[in-house]
Amino acid sequence: MFLVLFAQTASAQDTKIGVLNALQALFNSDAAQVVQTELEQEFALDEARATELTEQLQGLQEEYQQNEAVMTEDEIRRMNASAQDLQVQLQLIQERVQQAIQEKNQEFLASMQEELASAVTDVVAEGGFDLILNADSAPYYAPVLDITARVTAKLNEKLANANSSN
Image 1 (cartoon, rainbow, N blue to C red):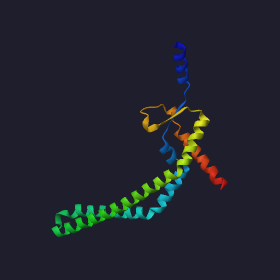
Image 2: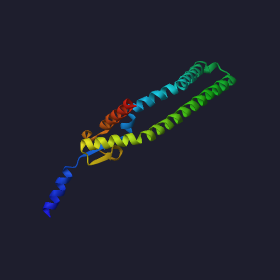
Image 3: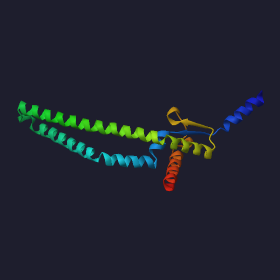
Image 4: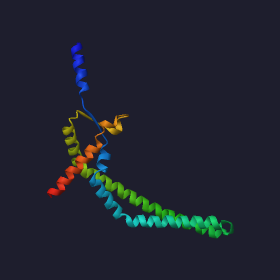
């Protein structure tokens, strides 16, 4: 009986464990950086318009603070209406951009699932891992167990090889 327990303990001690944050591995990849650049270019006009609206809104706030004492109720109402209009425009832009970014990220995740799984499989095989835990489910782990960067590097390598063969 003692030998069986000793053998199980020895076997458990030889188990090689890795911890992976798959989303981080994927979104740190070169492919994710390309998508991020595309998003920035796609929404550059929206970003510029949002900045312009924010500046206009700040200008109205400053004007109100400076002239509040001498403004009529009608002027205050018009200024509040203008500020609300600017806020609505700003919110619409932000919501549209946020929704588009979420959709692009979901598309990216869906398109990269096979590549990510393949990269994880390669890292597991190369590293001789017996168990990979999700970083979000592990309340604590030593940083030495984290294989996220290795998976990102493998993913980048695989995508670079795929692009060079095309």
